[in-house]
Image 1 (cartoon, rainbow, N blue to C red):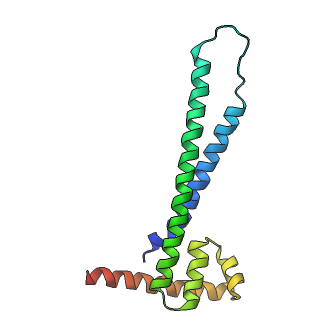
Image 2 (cartoon, rainbow, N blue to C red):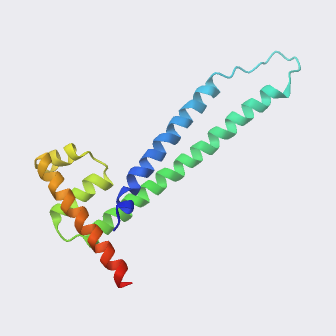
Length: 141
């Protein structure tokens, strides 16, 4: 297990947040479009703008759905990998809370009933072991 694998959930959550922001902007733009229904001929530019925004909305919603699906799958895979590769239950809990649930160190400490300082010590020890195991596994391959 690498640090990159551990941070994958956090990266996906950030991408989801970015796409949600983009979707909100598109929805605002769509709400501000006022159709002209006076029966007179108008340029195709207005229709084109409506079509572009509508298409962007649909594509962005689809992208968001895909990212949310990836997030669920990634969380499940990471939790399974942590439980499979880390033997100590305390380490497992810390890793799941921090990297699967994306909790802050402070919230992780609160949930585990440890001091923040102790959580940092445990986390450093875990990462040291995880990195060492990963390097050892690469050397064996």
